[in-house]
Amino acid sequence: MRVLILGIILLGAAGFLRAEWKPDPELVKLGKKVYMSRCVICHGEKGDGRGIIGVIHRVEKSGLVWTIYPRDFTSGVFKFRSTPSGCLPTDEDLMRTVRNGIPRSGMPGHADLSEKEIRAVVEYIKTFSERWREEEPCEPIKVKMPKWVGCPDSVAKGKELYKKMKCWECHGMEGKGDGPKADQLKDDWGDKIVPFDFTTGALKMGFAPDRLYLAFTAGLDGSGMPSYQDSLTDEERWHLVSYALKLMGRLDDIKKYGGGVCK
Image (cartoon, rainbow, N blue to C red; front, top):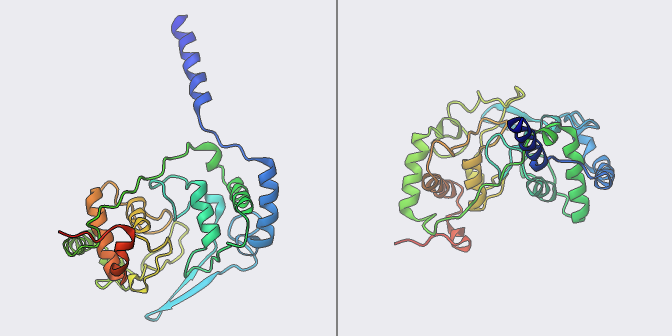
């Protein structure tokens, strides 16, 4: 009997401690208003990416054509996150995307909205997927950039890792997005996707070193870009950042982020 009672108490405590998300009715109401005025045209009334603008962007490169579609919020899958692979993004991740937009994707920034409006539309977007109600939130990935990031030795090691991890198969040896598998990539919805061209210097997630590190660590869920959190050490991922910055032509910026301190 004591064992049974203890079990019930523990189960009750686990349920009590579970960080279950419950939408804020007032925020959802405001968020829906913002969504219907700013987002519905692409993402659709049901949040399934089937707005009246069915195709956001078309990309043609080397004779190949890719079509970029609006995000389907009902899947609860997001590429740009500060959380580990397979996890939901944080509210701050989604707010950053709403505020800043996504370069080269057709997703505009909405910096003219107030912080409350941005938070509200994020709250409304979360109502489209049951994942928010069913899954525990994940802790964001901790990011602490070593001072040697961007130094020649780190760049050289990153180049070797770029080859070893076969990044070139999609992104090309010179990082132009023209690797031998560039025309074979599809996302989780079966749509063709475009490998990132590092030489544009404009990563969709942002070009600061910490954003590159998150891309290599968390991966881009729903796309062909994997997480290297388990396959590369933290140090190796930062070496990849160094080489990516070189491909992007942004090594000269590294010192303003606290890097480039070489022996």
